Length: 184
Image 1 (cartoon, rainbow, N blue to C red):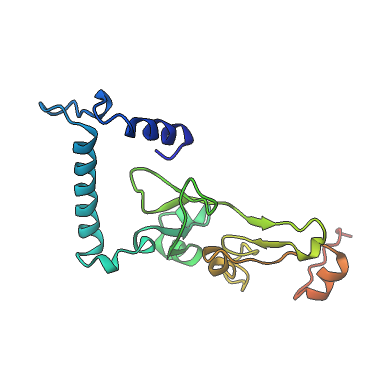
Image 2: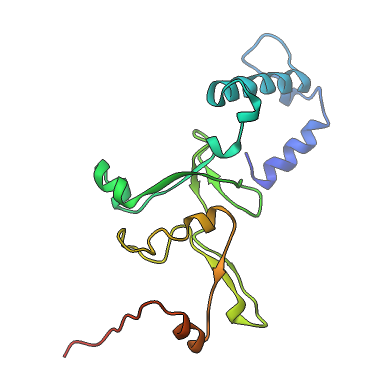
């Protein structure tokens, strides 16, 4: 589900309430579109009740649709102490697989995001120093760095920070400098 091809197919099928495509071959009855839609709605309501409770005011997408930022390879080491050090989340997350705020998931676990953009960037070609960017976690790959996970909330909330391009702007905003020199 979720591909453009599937969306077109189901949109066309929705206008054919008695199409044999609607019939569940595992039952003796011949189901129609309305039968299948009613069954799907009933199953969805049962799932929501089971997973989010009976109060519909508590049915919030981010309670079930979450993002966990897993560090590779240590984040999948099977050693919980290491995984808790390097992984971040889960966080409530917006998004879907056919919208601008793209996120995706495995159909067997549709609530947990398993892919997302590795960077979001808006480039201002008239003034590169006005460009905007955000990474899912942070600039650093070191878990003890303040920049390991300092962009998570920006990323999850659809916010950005300025992406400087000119040497003057970068040097003026730099917090630290790393100098690499060849070995003697």
